[in-house]
Length: 309
Length: 249
Image 1: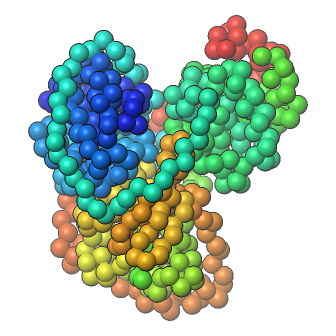
Image 2: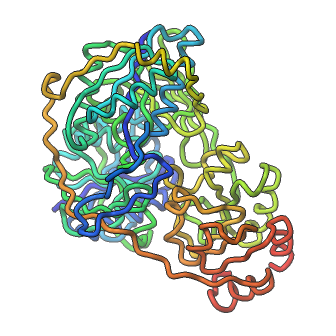
Image 3: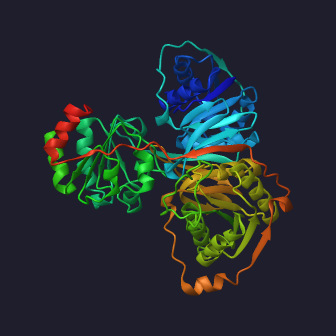
């Protein structure tokens, strides 16, 4: 078996999500290569070569791949994938955008968001917002998979010594072009990579009140998330959303504040190691998954928690 | 400009779905069905583009059982002009759905195809991307803003860490994220009017699409249960537990 892992990166550094994907590739077993598609992305290729267990790093350094436009990168992946039995990418917004497009070009039915590897062609994945786990077998010649990062423990970032090979392929379809990007600059860790996450729900009442969570997050080195209800109500932006339709997190500690615990939210956080729920409604379903539940008015409890940390 | 919107009939989002005891499938007997929420956002966006005078016609297509007509009627009541049902039994895989939609695109020649980013049953998040690949169109996935001018769609996308804006040549595929819009409620007169709007029926075979599945569902099972935790009396006890028992802070 030979596995191609699509590197997740920003042209200057390798995103840690790639390390979880390599872990999934190791669970399948076989030779593992990494494809880096980007522009002026030599440093990413060097970083990918350090990942243990990787044989070869293929670097396609071309302006057409600078912004990970799916139209261009999918063509490249479909071309490179011809020699592999598996193509794996992360279940990130970039992976979810690009991999299905590449799969269609290969006439392959991809399998999204795998959470377990049963064998080289059989995988587990959550469906119905994580209420059901499906075991799915693929009969396609090339298996195209996106990997739920929280389900696979990351491999170390260093210790390997893969060879780096440049590939000259340039695909610019001209179908799309990059206009701009607004990335929120934050000193806090990224939601999906944070060891501690504190999230607010509809009970927060407005966006300003999230400052209370920010203050605790800064003390704990935590990321701040939100329920879909808080996003729908316009309190905070959608990229903070934890849940079936947002981000899937599994930190060591998850603190849910003013979150009732709708199915779709639980789908995004119930694999966290320790869950704390703070809610004034003692019947809230969030308490059924919480290791530690505190029935309290968050506007009293949160400032108190802040002062005790 | 003609807009094609794809809608899927799925289990209503309020229903808590369970695996059958024998693990063969998900138990869907007597379960309430509805239009997939992301598809509803797609219909709303198309109708708004028509109301702004950018779109001239909104055609809604669903690929599913005969009962999917109900979801097409829902879309017509929200303001779509006519419907197409691609009737099939069983659940088609996203690749097969994308192939059916590609054939519909070839017949209808829409300049924009709007789909939900994912259906809340299979949670695949694939169909729009695959349709775009097969049709050779650009794709604006996870859209939170769509603007159309001079044959170009500017789509602002929800990405990890923020927003990205891309410009797409038309025709193009757009998939909707939550914040794109808030769908309207259909009024009673519009529900009545929707019953008179035209609806065609076709099949994957008529479209010449091979829908043979590429994957096999071997088993479904409930996720691992979390064991029940404890209630703490106050914040002091919570902090103590987190420090000394769970050792996570």
